[in-house]
Length: 431
Ligand code: ACM
Image (cartoon, rainbow, N blue to C red; front, side):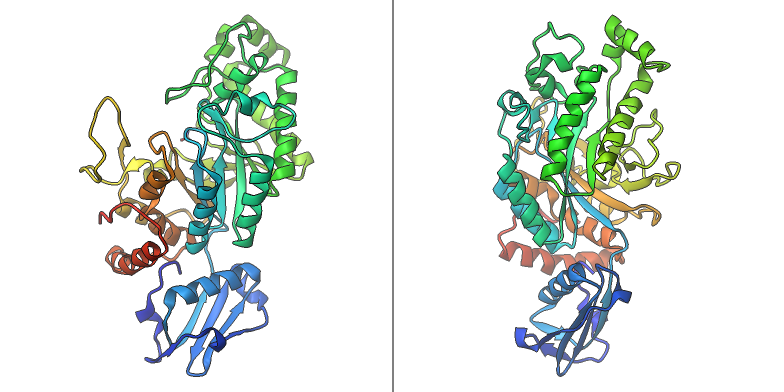
């Protein structure tokens, strides 16, 4: 459970006033699964039995959420999905390390276990790569970047809270910041590009040379050294093929590679990265694109629809219709930001709290994830404002314990009050 339902728990009618010394940690019970736990509450105290360390952590979270009066009874609980993620885009607007750590706390509070950091895009490169310093010297000019020590700190802090940090390095599109830093990665090295300062999809993509493949592999070598995550995300979405169609060199290269056309090049690129990551015993994750067959053995993050079937690949469901929290939470005005059609402060699509709560993911998926794209979220305060309370609804879906919506709303009030007491400043509750 994410937001406890105390009335359902109180099978025996009584309750115990919780004190730490009343908690007994019992030996692990493997039948509960690594992340599962059981709380037995009786007049003599509270027994916590878990399937492993993560289960113990989640059991103790539930306990603190239930307090101070814990009803008698038994709670046995485990998540439905192994991957319960939140994506934070730090490329469009850089988010300071302190906020990333704060977000990890928020994930842990909601029993979410993956923080996917979207580290690179047309508008910024946010990860120090020792071998290619210009990536951040040039590519992080708008905002900042994480040093290797920052990453180690974030990863360790997250691990203590059973959160895995999954890095995303976008390729072969969404790379204008990298091409601005190293023009030889692009399709017209004579042309000077800037780190992009507009939103949208830049048509400047990586070229298909072997040296560019090697560059990306070098970057991934440093990424896997820093991030212990079994998964590495390489983007792969929205890759325009205009430069590969137009450029004589790109066309020759397509022929050399035996590719039928530019629309096959993105899959080829992803396949090269998947093979490279496999040498490091890591799995590749990429965004789903309808024109591209998923590479066997890779994990596909589905964002355009809600279907979990992709020919045998592991699927993470991240449908924009349920999980893009940059969409406005209401068609009506929902905050005091000035309404200026020339300078929008939020995406125009609407995604309500109820829409998120009604997300019914296919249980065949490996996981689910919500997204914090930051084109219109320039500050940590704005991210928090947009993330909550929709993230609370998402967390119940991800854990697999949603109930009926009015009941959720009743439980949400006290939950938001608890978060507020911890200094969390979400947006308004728009039921
Ligand atoms: C995406 O929204 N382009 C994954």
